[in-house]
Length: 184
Image (cartoon, rainbow, N blue to C red):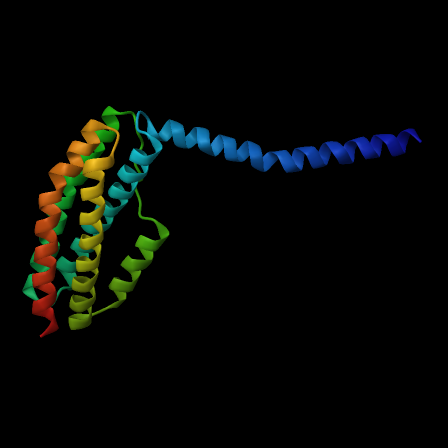
């Protein structure tokens, strides 16, 4: 009888622990995220982390374009992406550090997949794929930065977004020009 009661109690305790563990892990994850985001609101931290990953991606893809690009405009555009996005990434790192926020240092799975796709392409196929990706990417980035320049909570991050809009407009124009050249 006592053994049955003890077994029942252990089973109930085990269930409580097993069911409670995911809740505790989720709460730990929220605490980790809050700690990582420093003084940024959740919305601002999402923007800055996406921007950091996007910047890393632009630099890596730019390096790839400098090496694999057949068309001079592709290689030149890649060079420009490396220069401009390295500068922006450094500014972003300083801004994050000043707000005690941690930024990602590697690409997301999707960005890595996009990179892998372009690494497999060669010659004119690479040029066309890279140009097309850069037009799509910069259209999306420009819209996000224009929205962020109006909507972000942190004034320093909002100023960074505002400052980047003209650069992204220029990148989009250059990407469209490059796309036209590699279509031929």
